[in-house]
Image 1 (cartoon, rainbow over the protein chains, first blue to last red):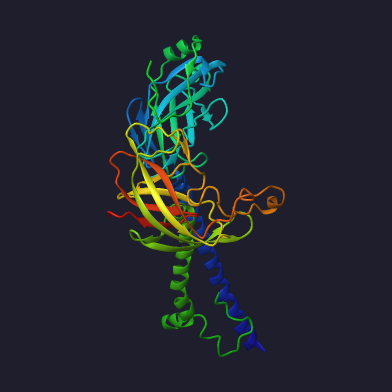
Image 2: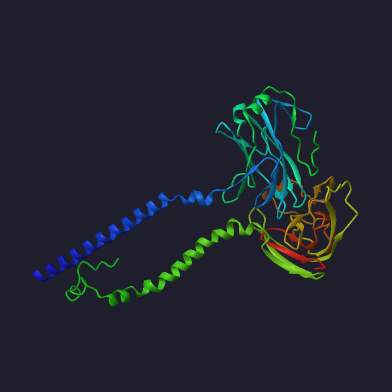
Length: 209
Length: 227
């Protein structure tokens, strides 16, 4: 009678200690994995866009295009070039861009203004604040104007960001253009009602006034 | 994993607490053989995202025709409704070169010139060829697309079929019953036809090949004569 009981006790006791040890090892591995993942937030860094800093008048090389921002202008009234005028209680900020597509025809679909007030102003492909450059062919410079309606506080220190995909800039180049704007620019534009022109895109260079 | 049964035989009991190293390798030999295979399969499975995310969003799988050669091209094109429809077509590049005969209204942007692409195609009249895209490339692989409506001109929307006899259009599913097909009044497409398109390229660009595609990543690559 006693021999089977002894045997059962031995075989049960030893694996239980081993099972506990294995369970603890699995939990420890999970904990270490969690620490590794949270201590090094690689996901964000792996997915982050490649931000290419630029300034007005200087070309910036992106994976898909060469981009040059012209001198920004502003006013309280915008002339979209379709015989209407748009007024704002803030300011209209316009930035002429020259786009030279690289590799294949490209349609730049992303623009946003990172204001000096810390806010980000979305620029859609339609609506009041818009950027519609169409599809640019390689070797044929495309001239288009970004227009964005912002409060005057956003103007000093504003940066313009331009990218390729409208909804997804992960892992791709994004131009970050320092527009070099000051409080004096903001005040002057907020008090000005001379319309600024932001016409449709063109493959002909805009006429400089 | 290796928990012995709760009611073992008396003979198995003494061996269990201290298994020898050789015994461990022996007991896990099956798992040891399977492990590298499983590892390889896991890597292959995760690599699949590379293909679907971006690799197939470009011209990747060419069907090549050397200069003047007729190439037979086949592809099952997803029609966006339910299934696929076959593209079965023969294509030949008759020529590609500078032209001064521009489409009506075309004004070339500064620093560019016009290149004319002449193609001869053959296909059954019931094959859906609407939806094709045409482009020329230089030796570096930079692509210059054929654009139907640009620079003041309007060329036919579909570059690879006769304008007045396009043949059938892709199915729109249930909408087919309520709208009139664009080719309803058109005569059937001939068995063999030629098309000419004008593509705008920058000055100094040498056309190395012409590409024609329906759905990425497959495409027809037609090499230009002097390359």
